[in-house]
Amino acid sequence: MGENRHIGILGTIITIVILILLILLTNVDTSKMSYLKSLSDKIIRPVQIGFTNLKNKISGNENFFATMDELKKENEELKEKNEELSENLREYEVVKSENESLKEKMNLTEKYAAYSTVAADVINKDISNYGSNLILNVGTKDGVEEKMTVISDQGLVGYIVKVSKDTSTVKVITDPASTVSCNISTTNESVLCKGTLENDQSLRVTYIPLDADLIVGDSVETSGVGQIYAKGIHIGIIKEIITTTNSTDRYAIVEAAVDFSKLNTVLVITNK
Image (cartoon, rainbow, N blue to C red; front, side):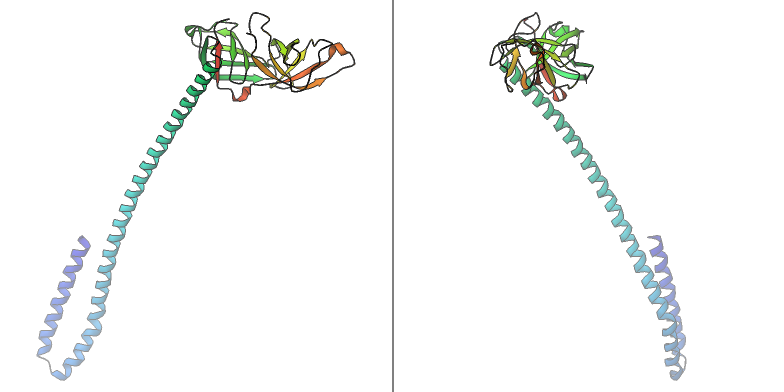
């Protein structure tokens, strides 16, 4: 605005000078008038045009900077809206995850309604070839004790080996130190399933009776023998039968029904 005022003052001065020249020129011979007018036009008009262009340019710059300020403001507003939308999306994902977890727990509770259970979330996993444990977010305050059975929607998970007030540790059935007394669905024969070092999803079936006719695809369930696991909980499916030179040493490989790498929600059976 200050620059525009200066240009206006300068224009006024130039106009006054022109008027003075015109007054002086009225006393000059007419023949010389046209020459002086032509000369003045050649000198003054470019100056006027230059100042006019300069004024327009400055005015245009002001509009340019005003537009830039508006764009910056709009950009900031869009950034704020984007951050708000991102936060809403994160909140939605959290709520969605919580709803899915609650739904899974409800489905599990209904499926195993015959048992008294406590729903739990898996808050940590230690699955390796040398040991397989899960940490749950339930403990003694929830009525959880050692040697209680842990199950999921797919089947048997393991049993509680350690409990604190707020958490508990589960030894899963695929742990090399884990042994489960089982029945084969087609023969009802009692066998033992042990965890293996080869694969965290496999168990080895041993102590198979000589007259037992095992079939690939047979379902394996807990027998209820022992003081830990209830009877009839699904363990997995026989996927391979290995026969050795000594028939008493034959064994089978069972693929565990539970995918421990994706396990998030379980039930602890509290009525032993």
